[in-house]
Image (cartoon, rainbow, N blue to C red; front, top):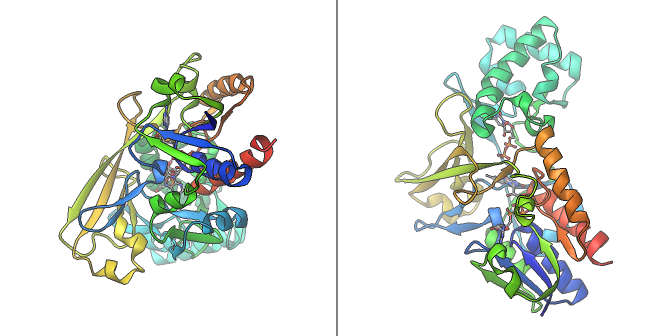
Length: 376
Ligand code: FAD
Ligand code: UDP
């Protein structure tokens, strides 16, 4: 008999398991239907010795000292600050779109004029979501906003979500705001890095505790009655748990096409976005994440992933992204209400909360869940 059964060995499941095991001394069983731990943060070395993020580029960034300190108990970090380029009219320009991008896409005189206007209106360092910038109807601002919307957001968002930017919750495109700055980094968080030995090793350290057992290749749906436990923590999709009684929650899926090339490097930075061309949204070159390790830089091959967004089809592919908008959030709230009626059953995680969480956010949420609900 386990004190806790945890469904899902991603950040949500493993962080809560660690807290329960180390702080309460209780017995925990974690199950995952996949054949590995670490959820979507899973990484592995391919046959060329390159560390691959199986489910797409995962860059750790946070401004929460609490989250950073917690994870630092389990890993050293390689300093890494993400920079992304987007191909626009044949040029590779920094994204989030910033003052450097502006100078690359407009002739010099016009770029200087627009830069002055943006600085006067918003001030250096301001981040402004594209949908907000579009509300400014003054002539020059409209030209700038329309350009960014058309060339950076429209095509990418249609590919990524099958929807236009304005059909998604405002927060989605606001993740990549226009940045009135010359700072080319994708994130400005205080703490940024890649776990020194990879995410999977970080997870191995998190769950290294005599009170934690782990079983892989076990789907909760098919095995719930054969495991004896007192309390359940579910980090999978909430609609699946309730057998889709109110209908299916929409998610977005992806297909990753991995290619290895016989050359040292493929592209200038880890991530190049293609908002306007091709069916893929971005290409990730994994070696960049660990380029500070000398041996790694010497490798004569490189592996990249082309990312193709897809409709999520239950049983066929993976539910990577909740599609947050008013209708879907309403449906989620029905499940949430249902979940609140259950005793000794807790829901936490990107899939269970139907929230577009980054890794640091889900670690923060899991720590909070433990402190506020589990300890009680
Ligand atoms: P998950 O990692 O999805 O783990 C849930 C686990 O539950 C899975 O392993 C699943 O197999 C298991 N499970 C589900 N149902 C069942 C069942 N019935 N039985 C057994 N097991 C089950 N975040 C960042 O901070 N930085 C990034 O750069 C970043 N890049 C990303 C790129 C992509 C393409 C994606 C999809 C996400 C990215 N994220 C990034 C987000 C990050 O992956 C999530 O925040 C994090 O993985 C969420 O952890 P979780 O434990 O909630 O969910
Ligand atoms: N986005 C875009 N163009 C870009 C980058 C992002 O339109 O070049 C939009 C798109 O809608 C995307 C969202 O901003 O889904 C969030 O981007 P982010 O890079 O945070 O996505 P993730 O890494 O989570 O897939």
